[in-house]
Image (cartoon, rainbow, N blue to C red; front, side, top):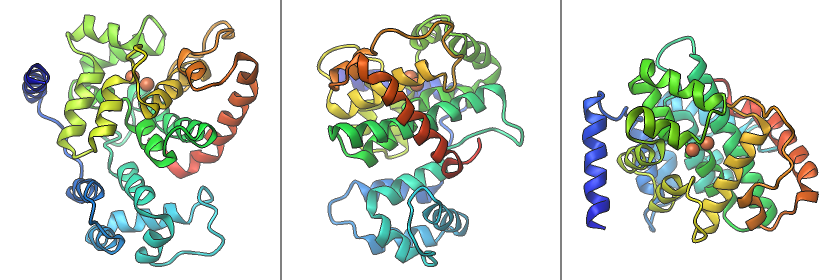
Length: 284
Ligand SMILES: [Fe+2]
Ligand SMILES: [Fe+2]
């Protein structure tokens, strides 16, 4: 535990030298803190969101998108929050608050990371719904933020991270190894430090820290996010599509109970879910 703490401080210092962890809006940090407390009420979250007009408008727009399939138009924030519930609203706030790009036109790396992250959210949610191994909303958020470390490294040192990103995109090796070789640090530890600063719940921070961990002691949520990430590599989401069709079952998917025979149909369901989620997540 002591060494963990020391490591986090070192990463904080490393990020500080690069310009510091980019902020997320104060409202998002407050919503995340509120979501972690036991006595939070839906009215509190609605009131908090209402203090940020841009965010409130976005939440209403997303609530009315085809993704949720609510048959009538939702016009008030308190109604939206009541309909969607705590976790969905928290997720909407995070989707809207994550830094996506540095300026107007997204770079290659920014577009690839956003594509990968949003597909991760959709696929992880689908796996949670199908396996019932974890809460679908937690899985969605885990999938969305699993590569926050890459997002932030790319924001802080874009010139340095772009070649790393291209090597990852071109499947030149495992992402964490490419990063460690280029920078002496990888996106799982950076992600952990960043998400702690942003008030994300411990369980999700652990998932992000361990999403490339191949040990057999992973909790179900982390396993789902890991399986989703493995699938994104097969489906070519934010990475170059594999040159050869994949003939092996991704290990985490196997541990979730899927078989190789089920894979083609599962991937069809994933593709359909990603297609219908496109509009919901928006462009980078
Ligand atoms: Fe990753
Ligand atoms: Fe990933």
